[in-house]
Image (cartoon, rainbow, N blue to C red; front, side, top):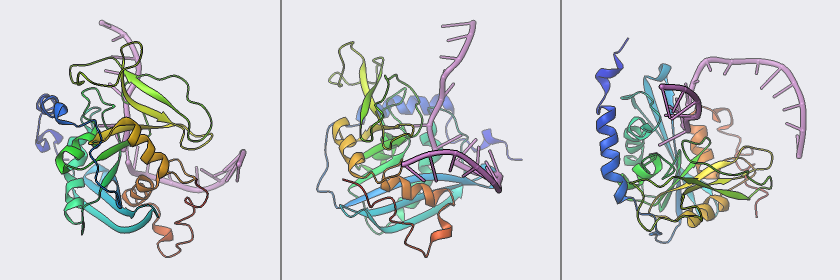
Length: 253
DNA sequence: GCGACAG
DNA sequence: ATCTTGTCGC
């Protein structure tokens, strides 16, 4: 029975202070080079949470064919605390990135980007650390509000939040002075929308464009979907039968 | 003070 | 996130 507090690298107070100091460095405008390799990142857990398993998948653009997969395991250091997710997941993610044969041009992360109380979700934090363009794709909302999302696939609605100290002066605002922090995207009909928020070095609109361009017929965009399968021990049953692998890609566009 | 709360 | 079978629907 490990005392979880002993494994903390940072206290919650220090982690929050670090987020506050890093948030201003997140770039919300496009700074992407030519994109030919995309990456999907996700984290899973084993041994009742004692082991963290990070998965990174590289895909060729625009084929969206996987060209490299890495699964990296290491001891879990921190418990899950809403708002401090990056401190729990990033160490393992970095371990996985170190083993890649090359760096991707754009990274899609399972979780929030700037749609975070201090505008530093795991996608933004990882983007800053790697100095790469990142996008956050989350399945649940952490903060902010939004109206109803149209039912049709590809439709979306803004996710907005009250302005905070962490928001830059030129942050994109709507008519009520609220700040846009992401978009609720109906990635598939009849399914709960996913939350798309910029991570680092990318604008809201460009982030949305990329995620939509990577949609198959499943809820999650291809990069994150593949990383998800790897990180959560699923999809191991079809390792040889590639027939199931490209199923989600056939009917897009 | 009372909820809400990524993975 | 994870523990877990069958089942409803395109």
